[in-house]
Image (cartoon, rainbow over all chains, first blue to last red):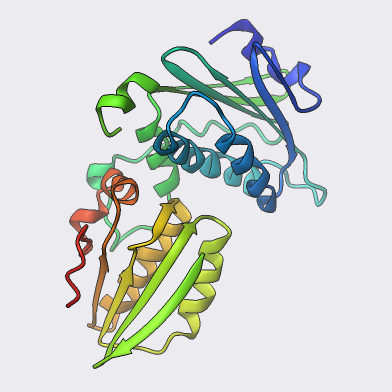
Length: 158
Length: 104
């Protein structure tokens, strides 16, 4: 993870595309998922299958922020940044909502029982798909960065 | 997403096409609330391209609904991408989910 991504929330103010990746800022509203999906499907350098998995992860994180980060009536913002290297895709979500570490309390898929529970599914799926996850609360921002190896997808099914 | 319903000998089949995400899963939820009880319910995913956790939750809700009524539930004709999602949650081991159409 580069320093640039770490500093991202303080810098990004509008949609842009340059050598350091792509950025998008959206209101934290669930209906904005359509715009986020469009943004991700336009990503170059990934297969359609990889993009669908990234959409799945992004939906989970974005909806979680929309649902729980801000408790005021006016929605806050969500900052999204993506970066593709030769062998990895990196996506960062940032919000100025309540401090929350989504990496806590991740369930083990082996122990999931649909007869007993229905929550926690999306988070469990997201962190199964992605290879590395980082969370930090910095300068009033929740910053969650997720990294997926693109090499593995070519020969495997993760 | 589109839902096409067929009914035969007490079995209701819902063919669900397109993307089942956080927004369209709400449509499926509303549809399911109005759906009458049946001794067998089948979700046909032949043309389902994508499912997110919100969609998986609707599948689980349908499974529970049928189980609580002592009725059958299964998901058929699931493509590889969607099956991946079921597999990573492990629910393919708990719910009758098949890659091939075995409804005949």
